[in-house]
Image (cartoon, rainbow, N blue to C red; front, side, top):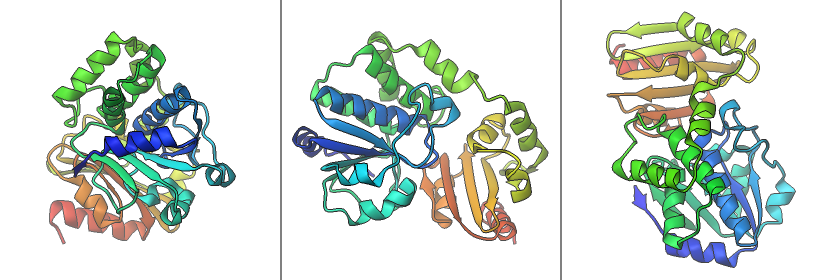
Length: 315
């Protein structure tokens, strides 16, 4: 889906005075980079601005933002709302119901296939590498002066969602944007170190966990299953690092199934030659053809069986 409505978005940005920017739960580099870029734009225009999320920044994105705001009072005091990198209202956690019922202007900047229809002004392009690349295009449309600080936010978001420009969502326009941001002063060496080289202290333990629980089914599926008793031993286990440890998976698809509690299952997926967006949509999630996820109430063992049936075509 490609729908960019920059004219109306720019008008709303110029009209509003107090903004709340929403990002998805379990925030990654793209949503943080795009949110910080929008925050920079709004503050430069003299607007009061707040980034709203109930979760903390991920380990690899804390260099961009140490903390978000988690306050319904702040949201209620805003006159204009913005969602960045959000495919559906369930992705903003407890704020989803508020956004569903609000009468305030709601601007959406996103690059996913949408899970539901929301937003009064929608700027969405599923062919773009990232939400941050859409924000870069917005700034170009506005002829906004990109400083080195802003270039850092933009480059980080784009680099994060393209896996440092090696994934299938990297396009000619993506590389041109990145090159332009380098010219404008983005500290690419520091950013790529923070995103792709620096890892938490327990990364080796997480990597061992990934390989210990990995099963490979021919050339079709690499499946990692993490039971609740194992999951709870790892405080704030970020499945991104499980995926990172298995980035050389030898199959069409990589699926990580995590039992977050007795009744909650989380899917984290990547693929080369399989549409994992359709797989995750089956469980109420979403994302992209090559990277998607879902969190839902369900039975852990039945979910694993169903995934194998869908991907492998087995009974």
